[in-house]
Amino acid sequence: MKLGKVKNRTILKRTALLLLCGAAGWYLKGRLTPAVPMMGAGMGDPYVLVQQVEQRNISPKKSYIGHVEAIKSVDLRPQITGYVEKVLFQEGSLVNEGDILFVIEQKRYMATVDLREAELNSAKANLVRAERDYKRQKSLSSQNYASKATLDTSESNYLQAKAAVAQAEANLELAKIDMGYTEIKAPITGYIGKALVTEGNYVNSTTQNLARIVQTDPIRVAFSVADKDFLNMREQRITQGSGSLKTELVLPNGRVLVNHLKSRFTDNEINSDTATIAVYAEYANQDNLLIPGNYVDIRIGNAEDNFALLVPQASVAQDKHGNYVMVVGDDNIAYERRVVMGDTLEDKQIVMDGLKPGERVVIQGLQKVSNGQKVQVGEIALATETVSVEGE
Picture 1 (tube, rainbow, N blue to C red):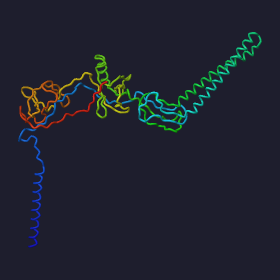
Picture 2 (picture 1 turned 30 degrees about the vertical axis):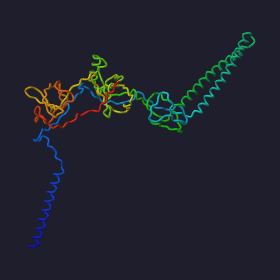
Picture 3 (picture 1 turned 180 degrees about the vertical axis):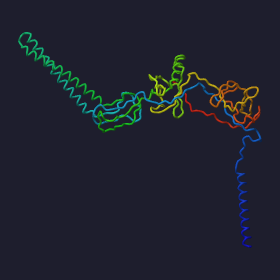
């Protein structure tokens, strides 16, 4: 009996201790947790969500995926054999047309040029001697002092000497051409990549590329347009002029380039498998933001912008007098504003009259607010796009 009483007392003590700890925990939680006002609570001013009136260009645009490609690109290859003596560029840098990029050993080719010059001088000397002998024999033959056979031999020697001079001149020119190939120059202006062959390596005309240069300004963006859209754009250009269309390029980081278009041309036939036609647009690229091989979004729309005011559809209410919204001023007082509505665009409503850009309209809690009532405000920011408008 005593053992049962001891166990009961122990259980009661532990139960009382747990209840005490729980009560202390709830007390501390109530003291340490800050009070949060309840949205839509009946105490005090009503809580509403507001958003600014948005002003946006609502001109229709067609969006396509474009591939950035270089208009000009060059793979540098050696035209002669020899060891690479110098690499005269910084990898990844801009090189200008005519810059010397590689030097292949020149001594052997310089010696060949000297040899060909000596051969030409020798051939010219032989020509002078042969010409004099031919003239002499011709004079003697006219006076019947020299035989016809002697004259023919002299004339043949003279003609062979002239041919030898021409051959020596051609050999010298070829030697100079080979000498010129010892300096590999940039044929275009553009950015050069990695040096694929370094100093000391032996190269020949079958060796791999030495380096690659791509032109970046101007640059080309290629994309495909559905045949129907292409015909619509062509008709618009015919009726309204070439300046009736505007293009926007959206880079991978969200930046938008506007009016950088320099020229455009289309392929000469429609792809019957996809019912599309390839379009090639050339753009100015002074800042090198368009990188060959990259993909961008290209948007084509009307050159004339059409800006409109937009509000969420949830902000518009209607009664027997028409449409209205609740506008919240800087003093957090809500005022009823009559508005004239236009078409629906996505999840927004176009406002034709009654609002100004930047004004705040109630988009949640509209049923709890009356005209002239003070409210508690929570504001939802507009979803903005990082846009940079560039001029030509």
